[in-house]
Amino acid sequence: MPLNLNAIKTPGVYIDEVSLLPPGVAPVETAVPAFVGYTESNPSGDNVPVLITSFLEYLEKFGGPQSPTALGIGVTVRDTFEDILADPADPASYVESKLVSREVMTDTAKIRPDNNMFFAVRHYFANGGAKCYIVSVSTTFGAVSDSDLVAGINALEQEDEPTLIVVPEAHGLGLGSGYDNVYSTALNQCNKLKDRFTIIDVPQAADNPDSSQATTDITDFQGNSNLGDYGLYGAAYYPYLETTIDFEYDASEESQIGITYEKVQADGSPSQAPDTLGADLSAITSDLLRKQIGNAIRDISIILPPSPAAAGLYARVDNERGVWKAPANVSIGAIVGPVVKINNTLQDTMNIDPNGGKSVNAIRHITGRGTVIWGARTLAGNDNEWRYVPVRRFFNFVEESVKKATYRFVFEPNDANTWVKIRGMIENFLTLQWSLGALQGSKPEQAFFVRVGLGQTMTPDDILNGRLIVEIGMAAVRPAEFIILRFMHKLPEA
Image (tube, rainbow, N blue to C red):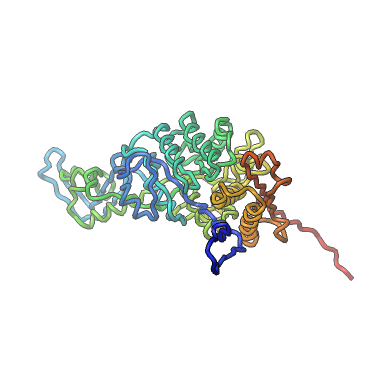
């Protein structure tokens, strides 16, 4: 702080340290998602954002997934014998010969849980996610309520750190007023605070849609006029993903896993075997069989909407490259693949929507690259300024960073000294972003400008009314969405 010369009254020597460097702008974090949904427990209460830094911490605070009963998980154990001799009228005559084989099968090969927060958060961390916020709207699993999810989203408004809103259970609402209510609330909040972005799941009508159903899903979503406002703050993804996440259960839930026991003869005919293994898993005494049943349950494929994986990739790309790099053309982890194959014909309509501009980012399997996000557009796909996800998120990043750094100048004298400090502070910050590759131009003057001062951005009336106005322009880099290679014949030269 400069020495106040008016306060010197006693003869002596005084030291006045003069700062020649402008204050700095601390960059804010860019990929801190907030997951909103139902959990098994929430020690902090409903609609309270809680920061976690690992999936283990989620388990400790919010518990596990829905019970096996709620998800309809049962197991069939089928034993095949060489020969089974029994008189149907006389069970006491039952005789069995050599056991040929034992099959352990679950009643379902795939499940798409509506209450999927447990699996969603796990998939987020499996794809490069770091810390995140959890907003538990209720500990009662069951039908998803849009009013519950909206209350959780509204609770985020008081939290400053989240930069992404993810509602993986909204897909259970299907297209309609409830779905619109959830995502309109999220997009409105993004527009109001201007420091966050919403990742949207396009509802999928079937677990394994064919190309015709996929086209219908996209057409219905793009024809929905209720998500048009503030689409620049959101991006939509399709289709769902078949993950490699294991289904987990604890010992207390073994009684909820029903066991069906079958005995058949080698020729496939059923036996008249009178014995059973027990009504549920808790009754199984064989350690080997319990292990076989556990492995079969863990092999059930969990189908999830793409938003949790997308949030993880946002975090990974931001950390490795920067928020200005499109979170696309990066392999998705912990998956078997997308549940439907997207071809170029379908993606043509997904990527460019000439009517409403609701671009949908496709998730595709690319030979040699795996399953990747193959799009980087916002819901404002027809907007030249805010068409791309990294452009919108980079502006969010700069705006929030500069906003927080400028708070220190509130109530400072509105004069040239303050203007110079603010301009120098912002220029230094933007020069750093340019050097990292976030801004176009061969030199900083081509990449951005910062204007502040009387006659430039302010009038005498502005100063009289306490307004300090700064204008910032940036040439943000845009993704190379279409790479065109031109080939032609060259005539030989003599």
